[in-house]
Amino acid sequence: MNRGKYSFFSIILYSVLCTFFFSCQKREKTYFEAIAANDIKLSEPQSGSWRYNHQEKFQQFEDFQKSKKIKPKPGKNTIYLQPIGEFSELQKKEIELTKEYLRIYFQLETKILPALPNTMFPEKVKRISKEGQEQILTGYILDSILIKRKPKDAVVLMGITEKDLFPKMDWNYVFGQASYEDGVGVTSIYRFSGGQVTDSNFNESLLRLIKVGSHEIGHMFGISHCLNANCVMNGSNSLPETDYHLARACSLCQQKLNSSIHYDHKKQLLALKNFFAKQHLNSELSRAEQDINVLQ
Image 1 (spheres, rainbow, N blue to C red):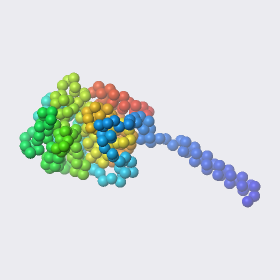
Image 2: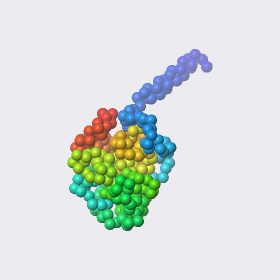
Image 3: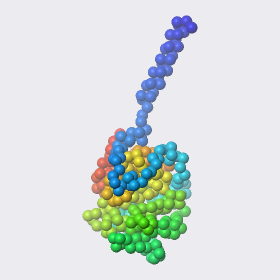
Image 4: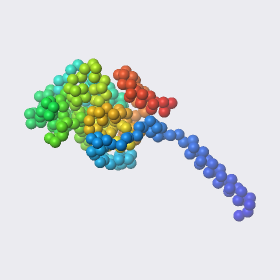
């Protein structure tokens, strides 16, 4: 090869490498890469916490994609809430706001069904806890009430009980439980307010309910307990642990959810910001604003 040809090919090679380099430099971060900067790293698990007591596998995005899960589809894309029990006016308001929040969070139509009475529960699924309150077996609610009453256009059905819940005899209580294949879940409003919602504890109780509600529905959409960051999908053993976890889904769990429910990130974030501001949930408002700022 003569010198002229060598110089010509050197120039071509240099141009290709420069084009590749600068194209890589100019590539914009994806939404999920950008908001990852706002993820809060998980601390070391403390004795008694969920992660301390449970050895769970990290669900990578690729694992999530391969898993069998429920997805919204035409004619089957509505989230339903099923209240069960006798609720005070403040509790009814809390359930109504939870409906609004879940509609924003999942960007899916969300409806509340007429409340069912506590007489739905036979004596064999009731017990009195060590603390003295009546509890209902979650498996009965899932299998004998919710699955049989799930509307045809429902992607998931979430029960909300007035009574406290237990999943099996050797457990003291549970905040929520779901049947992922059937797309039904249940949570109790009881423990979020010490058995009685008041004006003074309303926001605390509401925040707990929207966290547990979105957590359980997130499971129904195939998302495992989060081991990536402080996240609404973290497992929880206690109310202090639930309170410590954010209502915000981390960047990885948002990526998983959005791959099944293709919603507009900015629209969701702006609506979440307005919801948190209206309800004076200032810590969660700050988180939403941080994610919005990334998109500016």
